[in-house]
Each structure stands twice: as C-alpha cells, then as structure tokens.
Image (cartoon, rainbow, N blue to C red; front, side, top):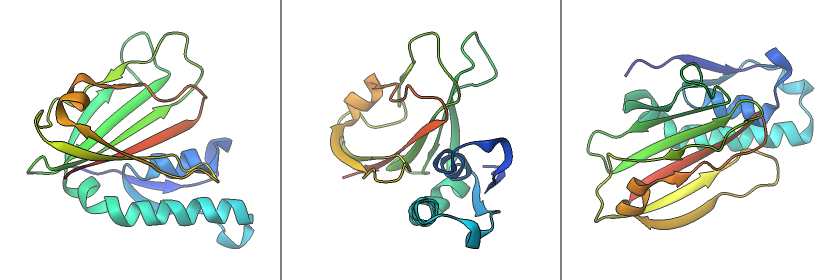
Length: 164
C-alpha cells in the first residue's frame, strides 16, 4: 500500500488531537515546536505516539480500504478509511468528522471480516482525558456495521480491530 507522509502541524488551526488522528493514517510524525506545547497538548502527542507505535506496521503494510470519501457524493463532511492485515486478523479503521454534517452519518460496514470470529475493538479518541473503549464483537456485528460515531467538526475516532 502506498502510504502518504502525514505530519502533525499547526497549519489550518485544527485541534491538535484531530491533526494527530489524521497523521496516524499515514507516516505519522510531528512537525511542531515541542517546547511550545502546553502540558495538555504534550499529553495528546504522547498518546498519539503510543497509538502510532502499535499501528504503524499495519498502516504502512496493510491493504487500504476507502470507506467514506470526503470528495465524492453529496456529503463531504466525513471521511473514513481502513488498513487491513494480510491475513484479515487485524484492521484499523479511521473515522473523521471534517465539518458540520447536514445528513445522518453512514454505517461503516467491515465486509472483510470473518462473521463467525470474535474481535476485540479498541475505540480511541485522542481528546485529552478520554480513555479508549474496549469491547468484544462478533465479526457478523462488525460486518453489519458500526454506526457513524462522530457529530462534532474536526473530531476523529480510531478503531483497532483484532481477532481474538
């Protein structure tokens, strides 16, 4: 899979947690003055680095599946993509709420999973003070779909999906 370089910057004035989540879907890096970060911003970056260390092999070597395009169709307020491991035992799904939406969000259907297998799903927002939510779901539930999880502009959720 061709992976884009993605660095966290202050460009565009977007929230740091959102910039980190977007950069995690590529070759994650920080293009920031680390000395100028507040304690809260530093904690967000540290959390993103922990996630990056877990995800980078999958993001760099997995199969890219585009789920929701921010450039096609009537609703351009959202984007979602996934990277899937070669043996389909793991995946990471990135969901981004880019701006205010005027229609209901799509259901994210994960068709590549085995319907009869149980998966651990770790949902992470990089917002300061939020902890990952870990659940176990059958592949059939994930194939049926995850309801769009975001409503606020410039927010993101990362779903790490691992076969148990």
